[in-house]
Image 1: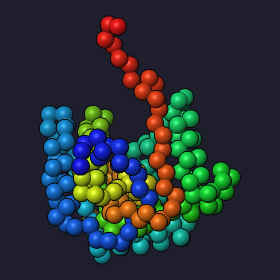
Image 2 (image 1 turned 60 degrees about the horizontal axis):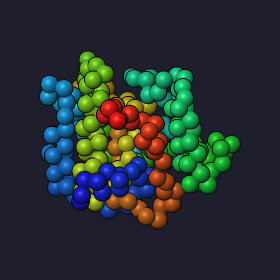
Image 3 (image 1 turned 180 degrees about the vertical axis):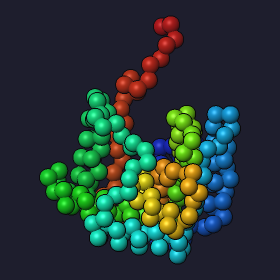
Image 4 (image 1 turned 90 degrees about the vertical axis):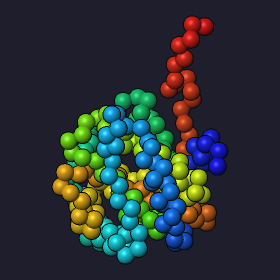
Length: 223
């Protein structure tokens, strides 16, 4: 797959088939993704790839907590600034409108929105998931390195004709994930990533827009 096609075809897919993801494909992707850049080659990421019974157990525990009305785990990092200024606030609002609009859920139907969001805990039906951790002692530059690693993983998944969806939502149930994976205490769960083959009949597909180039890029070339 051409690299431009991989970039433009990558999106957050929220509906997967139960078709197993070949272990060999995941190994190819993650071996190549290790080439992602990181400052001084620290490679600050630690990924757990989960399938089969362990993933089913994580899903079961998370869905059970949700059904019981359990509160989220204490936050280990701030997902968004408490007050998003313009234009970020507007972009986030537009995303919500596009996402729930594609599902036919009106803004005021908070119960339906919560039901849709709860699909996170089933990994949208995906048969494979990656849980990405970072050492607690790392700083902002290393968190950005993890972002570059995850993007590399997602683009390589497209080369394997696989789709994905990164989910910071899993950080809200980090204790549930840790109960199954037993990561070292020094690691912080940054996000999960659902991985699989897209279910084209799942509905609710949406390709969110992007800001025009002149809003995010400035060319300085003397013209």
